Amino acid sequence: MKDSLKRFQIEKIREKGRGEEETFIIAESPITLFLNGKEVVTLLATPENLKELAVGFLLSEGWLREDKPVEKIEMDPEGVVRVQVKYRNILTEKLFLRRTITSGCGRGTIFYNVLDSLRAKKIRSSLKISQGQVSKLMQELNQRSVLYRQSGSVHGAALATGRRILAFCEDIGRHNAVDKIFGAAFLQGLSTSGKILLTSGRVSSEILVKAVKRRIPFLLSYSGPTALAVNMAREMGVTLVGYVRGKGMRIYSHGERVGR
Image (cartoon, rainbow, N blue to C red):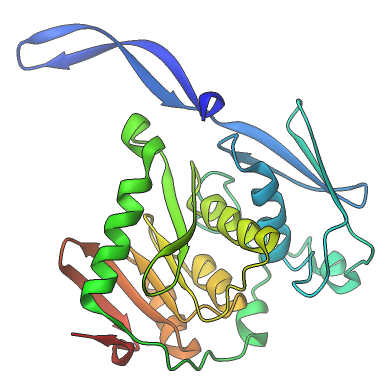
């Protein structure tokens, strides 16, 4: 966490006047990912949980398979993460340059293929949670957001069951934070299927696609969704709940899974 926060002397203006003050500002670093010696992408990210970010990004983009192990992960001080596996995903390599520029923050573009949403199977889940559980999980997400409280400039994400958070990460990019969660789950041997994804940031279509690909039936956010994300959630069987603040919330799709 030390590397993620930098001290700066700034000027602060209040009603009573202006003066100098020391504050923490979140770090933003270029992180280059290599898979089997081949450069894949450079991301702008908060420099912590970088192994998780690398694995989560490669999973989200189809470079890694959930049923195959990662042989080795190496990091160097220059912001390079090298991932080694014993297989290649030829189709992903061919499609990778067909990218869609989106509303991504942190890395600026998200490289998911638009066909992902068409190939994915609709999620069918009997899992139900109560309104109280939704509020409690979001409260726990906020309590864990240490970097946010110190800098005010990051997003948080978590993977949870109906009762507790299993993994939590923060990053300047909401997509990075989600990928870090998926990477953490993969490295810990946790299945994401049937779990709950929480995020502090806006739910756009690419965040929804990431959840669908990991077979996640619940997506809860402190913020709101885009119209495309709502339509996709309704089509793909995801319970999308936004503006979870205190006991209030807005349910955009498949509200039958949220009890009183």
